[in-house]
Length: 304
Image 1 (cartoon, rainbow, N blue to C red):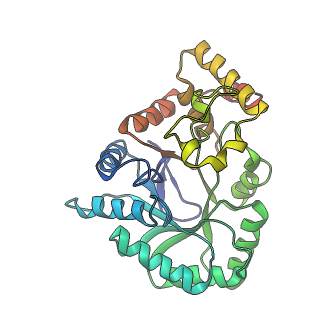
Image 2: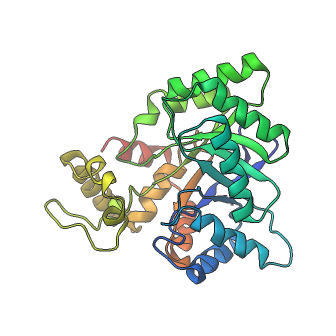
């Protein structure tokens, strides 16, 4: 496992992160404990959740909190969670305090805006995040699902006010969904903002389990979150999967491992978040990390 500092901070995060979106929604508490144990054993230190994860709001956080409370000592993990819009001052503070209670910790390592809020003045949102940092309730702040101009505007507000800065962004990134390459990745590299990429397998699309005209499998991520389907089920998406399948067969690697390795090989990505349903999927991510791919192979896959 490799570790890099989060943005300009002195907080190190693992190159593979554990996305805890499945906890309480797709898997039960016992399975989540097994996954967290395996992730920690493998050296994964970044655990990412959100107030909305888990079916019932806060369920994922509660599971993590009980797992932490059941250990003799708190493991050295970076605990990240998110607040959803609306992002008014009182709403943000109440959300952070509720997350602290559910996670059973005194401070959140990375507190992130889950999405852009068009209804709340940005300075109000950022001032609330700064207040939480000054109160010692959060260590660092970040932004999930944002455009480059939104991140740039937020960084400018913070610099002008003398506040702590956004140290990370969390966008989707995989062989099919690559819009962050145009502006967000270059901006983050220029401003030293870490990129925590999620959905590296495109909600299971890049495992090769789907074919044109095929049905959505019951119980899969696509069936649970159908809003992701249009992003992948199109001619270009299936061409990419076909090319990925051919290359995987040629080099003797599993399709998911090769798709993951492609994301991991992007130097501007600090950590790749893996949403697991079993400990075996943690091992799959480790296999992809060990696989590695050359610049030539990554360029070949990118050309798909």
